[in-house]
Structures are given as structure tokens and as C-alpha cells.
Length: 220
Image (cartoon, rainbow, N blue to C red; front, side, top):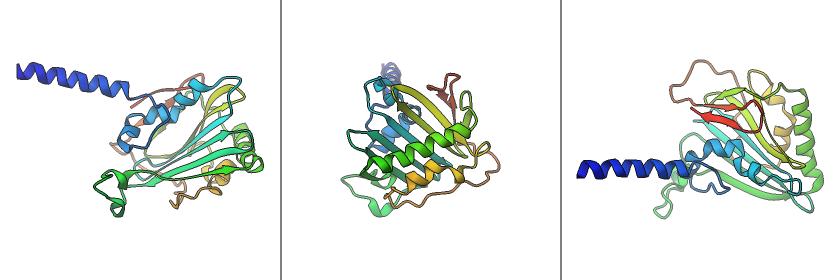
């Protein structure tokens, strides 16, 4: 009987985990965020809400070797300008932020938010569009977590697309949109610039953009 109960418990846990792998817009808990990371990067929530009448929405995710740094920026259009948020973390946790009321605090991303003027928002958007225009097509590209890259999910004028910038194909340190994003970043987390990466980390995982460049193909 105990064995049977254990099997049912495992199945229930797996089903619960599977139901929690789609990102819905809330990522305050770092453990929940790890379960929904692939969906978050793919912008599944942005895609689901993207219609001809919806405001433009951009999500810029920077992988500076996943174990060492990740950054995420949101830019949402509004009647005047855009709302902007920046989140970032380095490797490990800051134990100075530990509290019994929030034991996972040291591993949470630092966050800053502000409202940008239309001019400030257009600086980011125009720079992004210019970078996309000269970068290789992202469809079918695969990215490993122990490297440097940007993945951008966006709803522009009712059209959802994913575009990515890999360190092996693009000079990440010369991207104009990254400079514009960092100019408004108040997280206090120093940006980790791209540099050559040698070898393979056994803990590395992959994210692959599908052939239509409007989603990702799993995550391994």
C-alpha cells in the first residue's frame, strides 16, 4: 500500500509540475520562475495576449552564462511612453538578504521599474529594429545556457515574433538596444559583457527557436 501511495504521489507531483511550466506573467518566486523559464523566454504570455488592438510589448532576456548572470527587461507601450522594468541577478545568492520571512530572498532578481517618455522608449525600439535588420535570421537557431546571448520576444503592431542574438554570430557588445536598455537600468547589478566561452558545462541546457520564429522548441 505504501508503494502504491508513493507512486501516486510522484505522478501527482509530476502533473502539478507540468501544469506550472507555462509562464503567465508572475515570476516573483525564483523556484516557480525556474519551472517556467523556457515559457518566459519564449514570451508565451505575450503571444497569447498579442492582438491588432493590444499595446506593443517587448521582453529582452540576456543570458550572460546562465549560472553567472541573467537579465530581463520588459517594455510595454501605454498611452504616453512606455512602462519599463529591469531584473537581474549574478551567480549564487546574496546571503545578506536572507530573512526567515523570505528564505529564498538571496536568489531573487534585483528589480527596478520606471515610466519612460515616448522619446526614451523609441530610443530602445528604434535601436532594436536597427539591430534586427543587420543580424542573421533567428529561425531554427539553438542557444546553450553556458554562453552569451539575447532573446527578444515581442508583440509589435499585433505581430508576435522572437528574435535572438548569439555571440557566435553577432557582436553582442555593439548592440544598440542593449546600450539603451542599460541606460535606464537601476537594478545595481553590473552588466556582464560577452566574452569567448570555451568548453562545455555538464549543467548547460538548450533553447531552440522554431522555424517560424514565433516560439521555442522545448528546452533540454
